[in-house]
Amino acid sequence: MSEHRVASEIGVLKKVIVHRPGLEVARLTPENNHALLFDDILWTERAQEEHDRFADILRSRGAEVLYFRDLLAETLADDEVRGLLIDEVVTPRSCGMKVSQSLRHVLRECEMDALLDCLLGGLLKSELQGLDVDPLFADALSDRYSYVLPPLPNLFFMRDNAAWLGSGVACSVLATPARARESLYLRCIYRFHPDFRDEGFPFWYGREPAHTYPASLEGGDVLVLDEKTVLVGCGERTVPAAAELLANRLLGQEDFENVVVAHFRKGRAIMHLDTVLTMVDRDKFNFFPGVQQGMEVFILRRGSGSDLSVSRTDGIVPALTECLGRPLQFIASGEDEIGYVREQWDDGHNTFAVAPGVVISYMRNSVTNQRLRDAGVEVLELDASELCRGRGGSRCMTQPILREAVDWNR
Image 1 (cartoon, rainbow, N blue to C red):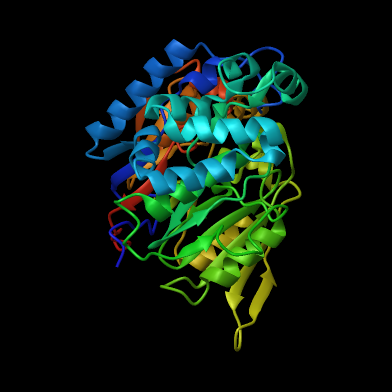
Image 2 (cartoon, rainbow, N blue to C red):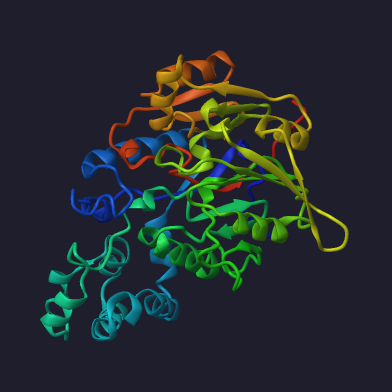
């Protein structure tokens, strides 16, 4: 039986994985930021300070904070695992034949910090000096930003690359090339890290042949609402085929009975479902009302035999009310049409619950935070001006791996 379990969005947080911004963020430039999914470049040192404050808030509520870089280092301390991951990342397809041959050898032998800097921060063609590689190969095979291996600046948004659902994990199939390597690293950690390798938990997604691109599934679109119900958003990053594949894997396992699938419009401001909807208490959701326009919502359940059944609903509110079996309150952002669009852009709905009725939110979303307080929700404010430039909030920056069970009758 796994020691890790997440059966709600709001149970008391006990253990969570985060990633402190590092070299990969420092390598954002005005030339490459859009290709790497950023609207702006970040002040790295200030982003690190803000992230440290965020981690302190998590610890202040009793959570054990694990750092992704540390977990990856501990996983790769096993030479065999190190070789397997290097061979999966550094390939002729990603780096070219000549460079990949030499680079694989160097990375197997180098110090751990140098290996991690390469895997996370990428590799510039200028950094190939000293390797047994003809410089012309480096020039020919680097991209137009001079990277042989691009950096992964989105890594501090740990929500998207994997999600725990009950006592198992869904390793994401990320929708964009800029983030594809992230899922390789998470699968490696969950398969081989000493804290996970012997637990025998199921992989709900990411290990089967069908669970590959274009069946993209990202954790920002997956909310585990209670022991029976998972909500999956289909928009810019997660596709309907992936939602069906996940439902087929989940339903009938553990206590899962309902997979609610919400199709919403695509857009940079609403790239994931958790940018417009998060659960903040047993009966309360932080909700962007503008997303309802054009949204189609379905409920998937296990039918007779092994088939899935599907039913169309009148919208997200009736679907969640039906599946959760209790009256729900949806708390809208902002104070007018302009205000709620501004605060949604600044991740006002991307709140992260550390306990029932207790959430972390950016301080800048003052109206949304006050509305949450007026509804009885305790808001722990994070003063941050750099982290939000990446278009993600407190939920985006966390990967919970252990929450306490919730008493739904309180």
